[in-house]
Image (cartoon, rainbow, N blue to C red; front, side, top):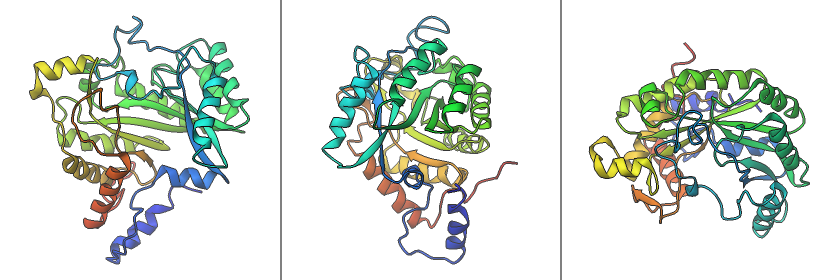
Length: 329
């Protein structure tokens, strides 16, 4: 199924002035994923024990200013366990919810291409040999993918689902330097293009609301991201979490931050979607960290509730993803 399938429909939908309650005014990654598999597919996170080059001294110490890895690691994900054991525990957890489904092994924590090629290959192969695993989702940094790794992903993508997710976070070099990413946006552009050139599905993460970023800068992210050959996009609202450099900055300089209310964020995302290429599938709109770690904003609302609010606002404004997209000019 081509990712262009929503655009003509939504354009006709808008021109005719139709407002029938149709919810899919954006390209939903879950729907795209369903079209690729005959059975239900669920991600299972695994922790392979990697680190990051801006944590271990190669490019810096302590990591990105906003990052506390505890905010997104499930309890069963512990690097002292083998990949197989983590997958088994994940399968057992989801088995109680759905009788029949398969899984994608999600290498999520830290930088999952930051090791020797042989060790990486061994871990990926262990996951792929699990009888319930249909493919890999690899979270990584754009400055940590070698030619060998990309060539390997190209080979295995012929028979398995492979998606490489890059933490781009911002398209502003000033912001990337401030949050201590250790790379610029040009690096992200190169990695995405090299990955997609090999026919590998390619995703990106963006954080909306990083320090000193105005609304217009945030919306320009949509324009710049839309020029890249991306398959998927994950959006995250900025969360100030305990145990981070950003938590200290927020306490000392709250004026640096523009933290959105739920309604403000919903409006921002709708504006963002209007400028986003209709060919990029949106996987998520928000992050949901453990309440005990979140300093601000304290939304106390579930992901699906935010998604519902965004869908309703798209309908209310009679708009859709890509309505103001500038194309690839």
